[in-house]
Length: 166
Image (spheres, rainbow, N blue to C red):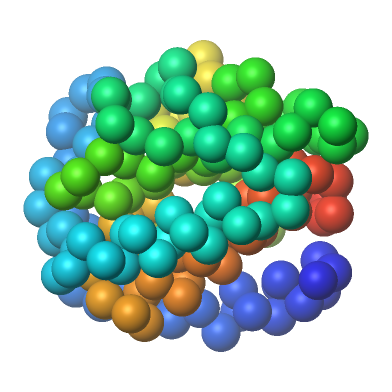
């Protein structure tokens, strides 16, 4: 897909239903409620995530134990601004949560923020971590799962250089 394709999909991204979940007040940034109705949603999300081209699962250095990190393989050229740490561009949080941290380039980040799907990471806000780092709320149902997959796909496309930041 091209930048224009992703941009068109993001423009039909609906507002996330309901209020934002309660979050921890400090690091680690964690979602405290509104978990998936069925953990199988997160299994499907992870299956999709690790099927993306040139993505491997490695231990994360920055998320709670049990979280699953998405790393871009060394064999692929990469955009260094698109990583949380080393070649990790996203991770899926451990059960029962299923939320994610990822990087999103502009204008996708602003669109996802505006529509209530993500929060900026506190380190990004304070300028001490990747400026593109966001917290993606756990998908609660099948419809939200499709949008979570899109956000991961955009993060992956930015990490591998398929799309650029505007």
